[in-house]
Image (tube, rainbow, N blue to C red; front, side, top):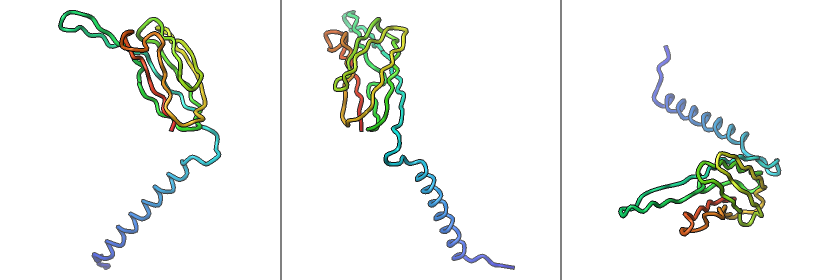
Length: 145
C-alpha cells in the first residue's frame, strides 16, 4: 500500500496548476488576432431615445440622445452603425471627422459604414437637437482605439 505524503500532494497540486495555466495561455494565443490579418467587421446597434419630465411649475421638458451614447471600436475595424429611430420624427446627423451624413426616421433603420482608420474620438451629432435650446445636445461618441 502506498502512503501519500504531504510533499507529494503539494507537487501534484502544483503540477495541476501549471498544466491548467499552460492550457489557458495556449487557448488565448490561438484566438488572439494576428498582425496583418483582415480587419474585424463590427455591427453596432444604436437607437434614438427621448427623456421627458415635468418641472415643479408644470413646464414639460424633454431631451433626445443616442443610445448607447459611446461606442468603442478598434483601429482597423470595418464598422457598420445600424441606427433605429424610436423617438422623434427625424434626426439628420453628421459624424465629425468621418465625412458621414445621414438621417434617422422614426420606425426606420439607417445604416452607415466606415473603416476605423485613425484613432480618436468622433462625435455623432443630431442636427435637429444640437444644443439645450433644441432639446439636446443629442451627441454620441465613437472612440477608435
